[in-house]
Length: 548
Image 1 (cartoon, rainbow, N blue to C red):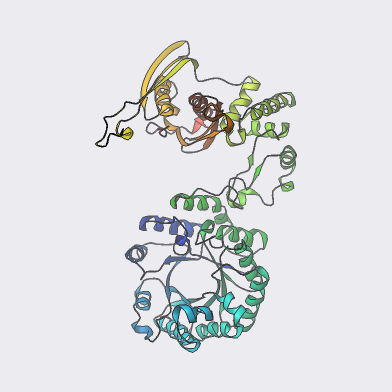
Image 2 (image 1 turned 45 degrees about the vertical axis):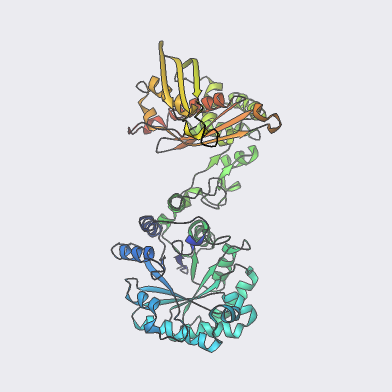
């Protein structure tokens, strides 16, 4: 049987130290359940004595049920010149529901001199007393040796004495922390190997790294290679400065590349879903280039690459994307060949021959030269294939549209200045279209031109195409393509739409930003009505758009 490596997630504590990171109690509970569903063994919920929100979280978690994970409470060793049993922070840990407690203690002489201002012997006593107290209270104790690798560089003998003090007092795991993220893999390997050799017979060894040198994952893997059997990290690498070691990548590397036993295989298939869910809860845009779970992790753009993947995916994919719950993506650009186009057509239910694929390739090259970016607009590309093959059926025939944007001057302020923000901008759109031989004229107001046009269009054809109720605009981006022309430059509009099941992109390019927006808007709705998407119609309230 393969060796087991325990996964220890510290997203809810260390991850929250990253800039802009903040979760409510309810959101933290959802993250904890997501981690449990992935098969994570230990979830460090936080520092219950640090603030009221953390205390409230532990109160809620005490009533929650987890299938795979144990909740861990975090704290520090006792204060200097104090008795462990009387230390308020240790008392909170002893009284909380969590059966596992992690204590962080000082190891590096720099911190003893500049931060805690205690002598080395008193520091050893602080470690030993604190671990012994919690172990005596029936807690399983993990000892986090803060700045261990910095300490080991300066004084390896004392660094190991700190670990030995924790082990003698009853800690079941000694986790070596590269708190500054300054250590490189070779030094991680040497120090971890020595600790395992000297103490590994008595306690397990863990690793906690940061990514300040870009080696967080590599350092974690190196420590495991030298005998560590618990690895700490955060989802998607959240954390202070450059972040913590990315537990998502570590898990996939350990299980799929190195053969370690981490989580059941069927749970590993939830990796992408879980990583993106935690991003959503943390209000973080997913990193498209993140290994294994990023949108680009299994994306292929070059024609030769796509041809290779179509023949045998192993040519350009290091694993089966399904193993981590990811999807293969075929990106379209001027670099694409006929194989890419045919593969994309097949995914959308079309059988495209070489002649038709060749026409599409030439059309793509022409559009990309004019400023289109079809790689980011798969919905528009699906429509392009149908236009070139004769399978395109428009939702309507446009007669005309018109947008009126009105802004009134306000009365001068007391100082004579014009208060331009006091008068709302009014936007009105009128469209004239034909559907099945019938003419529709609709006018609608909106908080911007795109919103007004969208409302008018939906009013005209919503009853004919009920699935439009499910489609909403979820992202809107504008880029100027030739800056030297200033306000007369060509504009590219990219928007993303979703029906709650799938998300697709659409694009419009024009010197007029409203025309570009209209083209992208229409493409997004027509792409959402294509076979394979429209069949997922699920009703619901009318969709909205952003204020543009």
